[in-house]
Length: 468
Image (cartoon, rainbow, N blue to C red; front, side):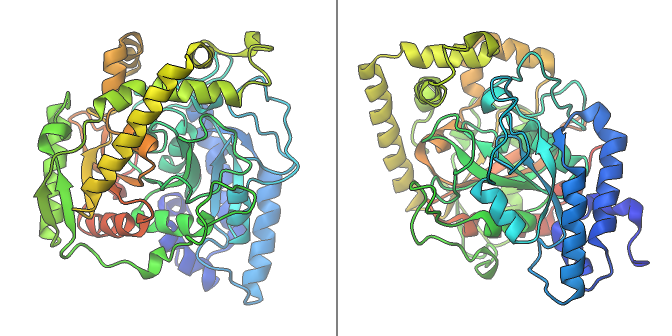
């Protein structure tokens, strides 16, 4: 225990903690207590947690400590405190999905991904805040999470609590969901690394639905290495979710090969659409680093995605209306304005308009898959600018075209189902993180993670932490 300073634990990566736990230089119980103390001291101003599971976490830590003491070490997540977005079912614990409609819902089983984390030995500290139903904004009755990098800045859509907690050292990694960018936006806004896997790679059983064909479950962590550890635990087919891909379990950690000879596509014209100078400068820094690592940077033309981003709300709205059919409009008065409006859009959409959107989505998926056959991955910004202030975000909400610009680099890959790894790649002049993403072929998450780990081997951005 003397080899680790208690005050430094909260910003260590999982890959740094795991060897300490394995050789008993660090106690899972002390680690959990340290995390609970930090949450008690800091989360009152950050509001990352919807529900703290302190008793359950300490019980799980005692069990982990006993198992490790007997030589029954389960792997690198054993004894690691993590947290999950409050739309993942947790047995016996309220799971409200950011709503008032479900504020009394207590599931009788864990979501598959929560169960898999527990089986890997991870300790669930609690449930993390999110926007209402995982859409755009919080329910009016809730207190939204605060960005630890700048209190007046956006926290990045629905997985905001997951990113705030991970960034501020209130857990060592977390689970989020991404329907239009809600893993990647929070990672970009909070200086983190996150993975939106291929659609079907990770089970959605026991996860409150926003839009079935757009929802993706994935990890949020401090590094690509930690993302790999989390992804390996939750990845793979699930008999409880028939949409999961059969026979596609990954061997992420065994497949890393760095970037030598890897073909990285860059469409500078596409990347520059409404993108500010600070973000473009950060992107050029990533390109230079990839070349230094041996990657072949290839100029490409990305399939037109702006109309896909523009149609995303209709596509999402129809599916959200289906997901909420039991409670909306019957309990419409309990819904906030943003989620109500989305459902109303879906309910008002005619079948022919929806079919046109579906056909456009299929065409985009095919064109993107064809591009990715010519390269190994595509480099893009997460968004055209760093996390906006709340005032700027209000202006975006009033302007449909500006909002379409915000999601132009993220939502198309929810529509197409391709995997994307988000990672920090710079800071603005006022110290806010900037994010980039690597997009790959469906099922090739391991290549993206390997590239992210190589980049983070020579960059500093993922090692920087907010001033809290």
